[in-house]
Image (cartoon, rainbow, N blue to C red; front, side, top):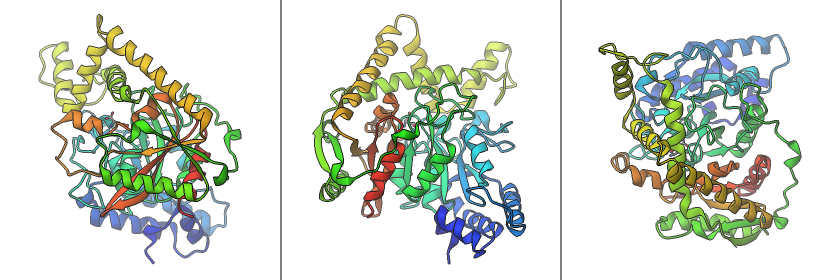
Length: 471
Ligand code: GLN
């Protein structure tokens, strides 16, 4: 039996039945990583010793017949912009190459409390800026379905780790699509929670009003389990809220109204992707759901507004990396200004510098009203679009990406074409909504993901709707 292919529930059962021990299980995953990570490069660092130690503790509890926490012995991988105490946290940047996390992110603390075994930290676009994981300072992650192609980004390492059977689940972060896009490109399930549903404490801040942490897993049940473990109010993140459990409803597919926005099926979408998504929608229609064409009229402004708000917040958040407080510091500097400029010039990669410049420009006096303030107004319009749509429908179905996983190197020299990949994902972050990326088919060997967008705090509903696809 290949135990690296098991789901969380199967792992729990296997451990309980003593089919394998937590250490054996952990070792199997570590062996697989050792064999194949060189090729896929999903992990930036693997904590072999720490993982075995955690697994030994679980085995000890099992042998003493102690009651076990809910995820005892379940291995996982964590995106390298989320802090795990004692492990390096690089954000895939030279700036933080030698930075050791002094504490656990709240989500990591919750996973550890439930007995998860952390295998290591996964690759990403530097500071989560990108859609292909090629912006990592340490080299790109490959798509396990076709290693000549990108895994999507920025949580490419987290998605590839699950797709390559390096871990049954992983955590990623999503600011403009970074959980959903790699989930779609790698053929795994990914959930971007409602803004505020999951604590951001211990996540290296990118664009704070858009960032959310969420799970990537092999199936929806596992995603749901992890989401329910990490969600909830955290006094250390003032934007987090108590999750309102009353949002949960019994989903009857014949009462379900699904909205399909006409603005998402226009020129530029790959016809094979469109066909796969339309077939998936048809499947729901055949099951009895009512499919309605809807309009989200401000969609055409979403990407432009996102690429103002995102760099603006990034430029402010990344000001802390100045060569003085922590991180990379250039020694060869004549004065304080040179410490700043040389440390930032050398420590940050191209895309990060581009965003800082764009953001600084958009926020500068004279331009603030024209760019930043205007984008905030577009953000409100986008939110209103969704609110109006949700008066008529229960969920909104769209593609995750207009294109199939592309070749490594194909878009990296053309930032605008890379930004365009995010066209279907950024509105969800702008409106703070939950959305699921569900693998619903393949074109050749390349997976295609369906996006299921829900009302705020209706994660469990969109997960239940997603489950029906496989029935
Ligand atoms: N690709 C988008 C960007 O580069 C989204 C990134 C993310 O969600 N972290 O901003």
